Length: 624
Image (cartoon, rainbow, N blue to C red; front, side):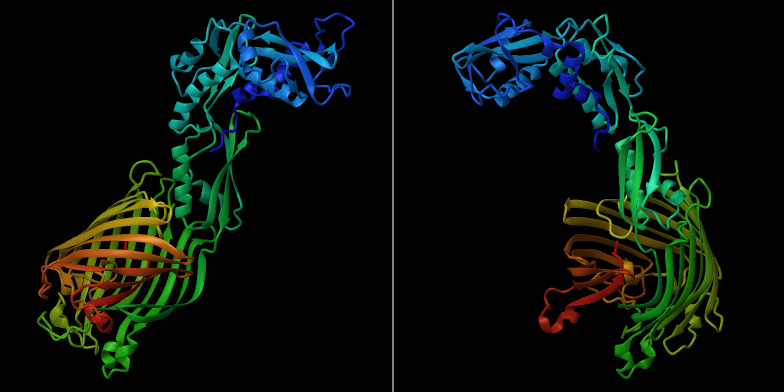
């Protein structure tokens, strides 16, 4: 953050010093101390009769007790040939010593092409004390005055004054008060008052106002409600960085910058301008994808994460999945995969407390088990098992603490009907809870979630931590408790590489049906292993590590390792399982596409049996 106001810096600059000299000591009008008939040349008004090279025969310092220090600072010495430009640099070196209110050189012709250099100097007065003109809001008065009181009783030295100011500026910057600055209050165009005292005033860097620039669709209130900095507050860098992170996480903008400007009413205050560049948030059309569970996916959708520019989220989607390979392999029944339709709506600011309300209406069919040759669940699954869920859900969430807290609590309510059939459409009533001929169960659930999120981006985080813990009691045709959680951290090892570490797990307690078990599919997959329902259990635990790096836009790469297992299932899952491999990420209008290849058996790995030793995985978004 650049410093907007620096009165002391202006005070100590040569330009200010020269102005002060003109105002307080008209030294340019001083006569030469030589005889009246001797001609004196002023360097600032170059006399054309003065030659380009000036022979200095003598140097005389007039009016200062620091003559020795002045002579030591000069590059020009008696007997040298010099130029007016070199003499001006000498004048600046004398000024930099800090003791002087005026430094004015003159040349006096001595005959024979030689000149005497006269340096008229006016010393600064003695500093008699320091006065604080207003109460300090950021530092105790004794801390603020201490560096300056050490200069009392001495001739005022502007260089030492600058060092004293830096002793105040440094802790302010370290504490995040980037716009705070110390003003040396001028007393009738002089630094010291009539009693020889220096007057100080610490401006805390208060915000005069805040406005938005560049938004064409997004309403200004939607942007400003994400910003904790308000007019009248003191600017603090840490708050500003968190505000920028929240705005970027909205994913409404390609760019977000915060630019400071000098205040209109008070130059010691700051106007903040939020400059945004919007990007497309709505999309309507066809979607196409591919994953292990659903096969080839196609559908239509309408999605807008910033509906009408008011920050609301609407998603309407209809899609179907088909296993094309099985369709033409003589097993068309198992070619049936997912079929789903859903409507989701989310209002993130239902109340001023940042309380969000979401609602979903859904009907979806998904394959749970397919391609398992040895049934171990008491039924023949050679034709696979399909689950159909139809229902409605509501969720209500809000931050815990202030509205910008990374901690958030959420309560969700769901009512749904769940049915089970094989891939041929025959109801599997023996696997349902109710035992109905239709193999359908009616369930109600209330879930509570506690989450913590400091990620810099929701879709592609480079740093931060995310964790959540969910407990969901279910009742209806039976009752049980589902507990699940995850924890992820993102570490920027370099500008071009991020290391992501994550762990997830869950457990079921009570009389739950088979379709509620945890499955090794999607985000819960152990990469390198099939996502056909073979990995299933009442409990599971998976740890993952990824190194993420760009290749060329819009493609990036990933190296990964997964370790975990599923427990408590009738399907034997064996010992802990690992998967190691590499993947690609593709930035598309539909989101981030994920393609991974994981190896589960290095002993059998070879070019001819890549799918026997490992597995290809397709999905949307990062795994964690």
